[in-house]
Length: 138
Picture 1 (cartoon, rainbow, N blue to C red):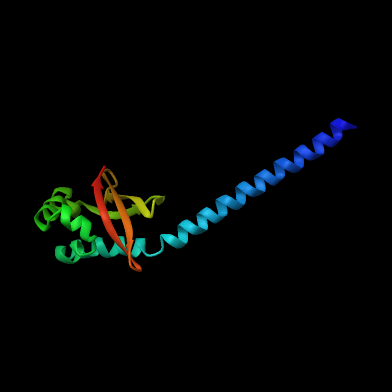
Picture 2: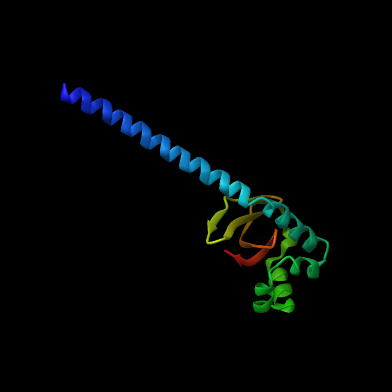
């Protein structure tokens, strides 16, 4: 009789733990989606500006902190070193949230899909808008 009672409580505790874990995961996923809203349009805008040759407009999508550490000339050199003309397709990965920053790995694929250029973008919220805090070539 004690074993049956123990088994029933064990199943209930296990179900309660699974429900709590599922609830936590769901709340985290919703929080991530809501907080990351606006990042994909920013990435699209950034690459559209670069493709149109409006490097200054793309540079202004970065934060003041980024512009303090990376001047305009270095930004232009960085972009020219990426040789973005070879890439056409953009795929973004899963965003990672850390201390108010969101890091997103973006993969640029060439038309023949033989070459991939992974870039790590870090975003922070400035006011109500997202801005690019860091761009790293992986």
